[in-house]
Image (tube, rainbow, N blue to C red; front, side, top):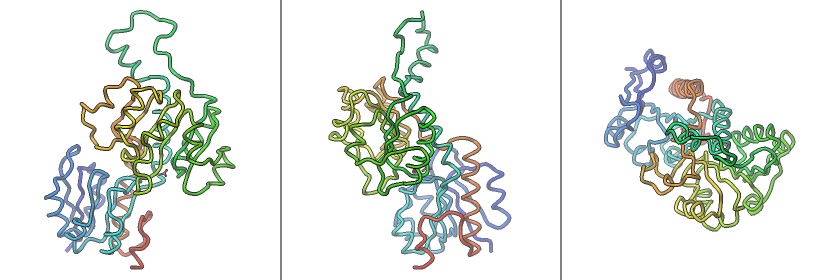
Length: 326
Ligand code: GLV
Ligand code: GLV
């Protein structure tokens, strides 16, 4: 009997057909609606491998229902949607997709920064809605990016790739991270600062840290109050790192100038959410790694990891090394 792989969202045929030779594969047949909880819990009873999306909560309940499960391959670099302690307890390998998405996500992050500073989405709306009646001196005048200070919160691989882009714009680069990154300091001239200085000095504060109990609600009222009134907050990491109500109040009251958000507390964000009523917010639907090239590579990494773990080989990427030794 072939091992059973369950995929929680419809993926392209050529990706899936690569698995069908060795495995019995079932897939939730929708591209844009997540698998209902009860179906997921039913499927994992028999599954040897799961290919999941960041919108699936893979918690202890899932692992408890999954006696034969060996691997969860998450189509994302972030894995805050997966309970790693439970995975370890049940000896399940958890694999993510780092590296292949680094430059793509950095491109989007820097693009979002530019779009927010230069009011690109507002400007595009303006033209498309026929409001453009004449050139005028201060029409949609934004804020310069070059030569400003970028403050990167979370200097992982994506942070480093964003710093490289910032260097091209001759920005001053400061960062805060759990550990110092001497290589980034040397390569792009980034300077390590305490969190306090990151808040008070940044013209563009860019959040790229993973979501964890330590980073949850790092940015609240008190932090926004310390930022420059002329500054911008960019989040391409995870929504819950920010208190959205406090961000709304800060934007509304001019404590900071604008925000570029690719991620939200609740995704999809409700269209009536107060943040979406603000002109100085650029909102994107969590598309950091969304290019055809990179999503294809991420799927291939997941497929390769499933194949390897189910044939007792080391996966190319592993989140919980402990799963082997436990
Ligand atoms: C996207 O947010 C990811 O974690 O890959
Ligand atoms: C994680 O999100 C990173 O910065 O690599």
